[in-house]
Amino acid sequence: MLEAALALIGEQGYAGASLRKLAAMVGMAQPSLYHYFTSKEDLVEQLIETFAGDMLSLGPMVVPTELEQVPEMVRDLTFSLYQHDTHPLFVRALFAISRSHPRWGKLLREIFVDRVEQSMRMLAHPFVQRGDIDEQDAVFLARMMISAIGLKLMEERVLFEARELGPDVHAYGDFVVATMREVIQTMVARRRARGDTPS
Image (cartoon, rainbow, N blue to C red; front, side):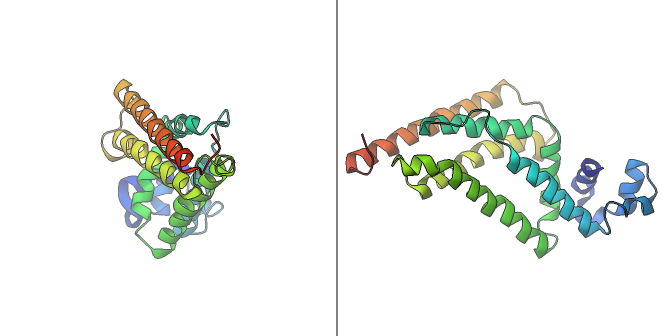
């Protein structure tokens, strides 16, 4: 039902979507929906918390032990979100929701900026403690990589006609990983040259 709601909002926008239309889409009587949500606003809040929670709960199969392994992990996690239809539907709905009311914009900023940044800082912590990288640099690098890969995946699965993630998209992901590794190597070398990190 929640995925149907994502599709409805993505297609018709926040203003055009309604519990009546959702009930018709899923083949239920509208009063039955009130067992799940009391209003359209309640539905939207459940959508955001449910699918953002799913996104933030993703974790790597293997936790990186070296800083240069992080780009590959970020790529794999980002790609895994877009392999199936649910996250692209969620992102499409977010574009329709986020500016419809300050309440949603504030909640989405808290999730996609504050909570994501907190996750980045937790991931970076062992490397920061080891002296490999400055914490803020780690956050900036992670954001840069997520933006580089995420926008490409949105082009393929959200913004235009939906397509499978083909070899060219995976080649782009590999390019971003290789480029970020070079950036990390350069940054670590500079820190070592300044004496900011153990050799």
